[in-house]
Image (cartoon, rainbow, N blue to C red; front, side):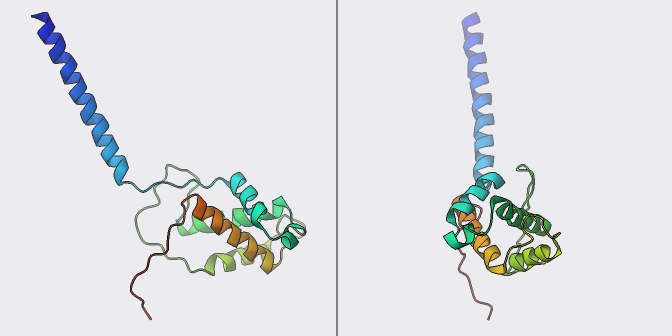
Length: 152
């Protein structure tokens, strides 16, 4: 008789565990995959993909400065967060193609003379941001372009 209770307890435990794991799995399956931007990895990735004439003129500190400003911009727009667990929300956030560049060039102008990134040209900043976009695509932070109705 005791064996019946043991088997019943084991079955009950299994059913509870299966339901808990199944509901957690279903909940995680509906969430979008999180992309984690590793600044140190991004610096190396971007530096490897810059044209030779630009890498001869700038250093890793300059690349770090531009990528840091880009992250500051994305955070100010609510697109990025310093913590991976933060939920950026599900609302639509539209950022023009040139808006981050203009924001970074504004930061570049206000940077102290002699600090990292302060002597960069506009062309160098554009090259860094283009290489960074390739990094963002490679980690899944930027997906394919959504084709929809034109608003022209």
